[in-house]
Length: 231
Image (cartoon, rainbow, N blue to C red; front, side, top):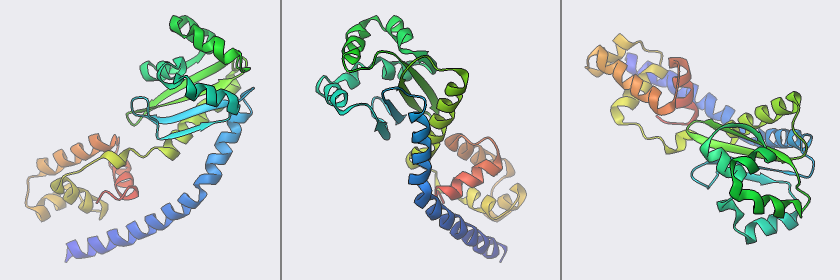
């Protein structure tokens, strides 16, 4: 009986969450637009952002560079040698394009070509979260502290908005059993008794799920499990 009551409570909680997620989905374009417009204010002749890189393939790309440069970039297959991306795939942090020329001497031709299209100087910011990399490059003079804060906040927010790590996560049935009862509000001892397993087994399965979802607390774990529909 307790199992049924808990399960019904979970279903109500999940339905409320899914409704919220649908509302959030409808708001995504507005949120994305606000974040991207904030980047317009800290770039001179456009910017480019790639979110959730897996190798050289991001899950989200947006560029405001002139179409002439975009066409040139594609024609020359610069994606494979772009020092801004190479920096992001090898480290994190903020650098100017002058810094990148020193870090990647072979990029001199790339930057000379970019300068011919009005992209003379700029900034690159790379972050790593959820096991993926996101990179932002903005044309213009070296960022001041306030501009760097805007860039960092926008990049982290867009990473969270566009990349959902749960899409590639698979949980075993025993782990899902534990998570389902956790979502129902059951404690470790209750879960062990209901599933007929040892208390340490319950805790081990919870640790497995936390590692898979990179969750730091049980509350965060439950939130992510329901949000991404993993059970």
